[in-house]
Image 1 (spheres, one colour):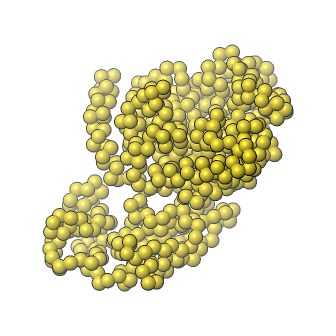
Image 2 (cartoon, rainbow, N blue to C red):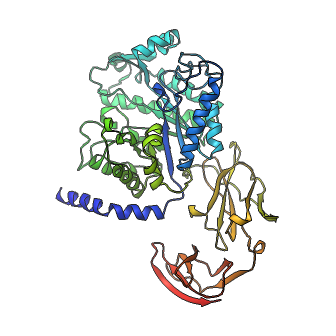
Image 3 (cartoon, rainbow, N blue to C red):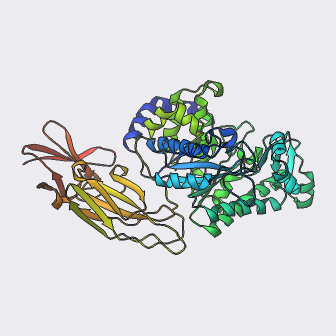
Length: 553
């Protein structure tokens, strides 16, 4: 135990150095996610549609939110589309949620989910439909819904407990109902993901009244094992439903932040597996979840070892820790901003696929500086590498200069059968070839068009590249084009063949100013190089100089 304490102390001493290093070496792929909460009008909508003119105001509210998220390099929005037995789109199964109009079942005169998808995709963001699985709401909410409530339409699916109503996990028909609802969303909308929340038993289940269902379906299992099986059956059937309709849609859920007790750290009786019967790590092992967003709204040793436990048991799928940015508020703990920054950086160093912040309003009202500091650059959503479909083809690229404009175009890549879309990423570099693995070289991601235009005077690129991106987020081989001939005369540097460890190349002028940085190549073209002496360095991946030389122009 003493050794663990020393490790913790050393981590906190080194944290500022680790943070600084991560800012300069940001990953290309990383979920930058937020939860957009609808219940009680917490994040959106806050404007309710009372008269037709309010529709535009409600839509405008969302576009302003998305503009702000885009400016912070957020790339994934988890939008709550099933609130408490009511929904955010015109459904044949459940009524419109009252959050949009103030009246249960009343339409806001447009389709909020369709509008949100269009606006997210316009900004290069993914939208994951957030479905609250089992909770149906408090007694007051059920009374307000009246005959529209599931408790009135199908009482056998519902269980009351401590002033709330829940869909009953022990009733096999619950999975079928949820699959119909999920199928409606996925088949009708171009969602990028389907996110399950509260796919678990109620908190503190002492006295939870499921004895009848246990007698009918327990089949010799212990009560705890039977409950875990029930939740897993729902997860498995929802996953199968989504994949049978659109296999590229990412299925995820948000389990409790601690899966179980660890050898050296207790969950204090509050964990996913034993308290609410979520065998979430087993879902990853079985392959019935693509992403987990564990709700790690804790700090210190209630956070760090549990992040690593999730990542070490990811089985090749994506772990995206949920960070409780609401904890910055005095009424929720008054955390120091340093704690949030540390959690974001530690999640990255643990090898997770990104992070998600709960929730949007707390980010935009209180946490902008934190998020912008850690995620100062854009990132692409990680691909689903486990997908069975073939990779997209390589686009055929051409480039021309029209007056003061560079015009890049390519032939559309044919989508793989069953996939609705292929998008494109455009890269540019000062080197004679583009390193598409370096996120700094990304000019524009997730383009739908087959062309890209930008002014010559703002471009210092020597080469450009385009990749095709399939619906799983996987990229083709890059199609590259050197644009040296379009510019003024260039200086070509002939360099020795790379030795072991030579990864990067940097060129400095006599004043020590860096004028070029890129992947090491034996042939490098540098634009507009004046006469003088220059220093060339070959570096390894960590930035250590392995070779240097000078040249004179």
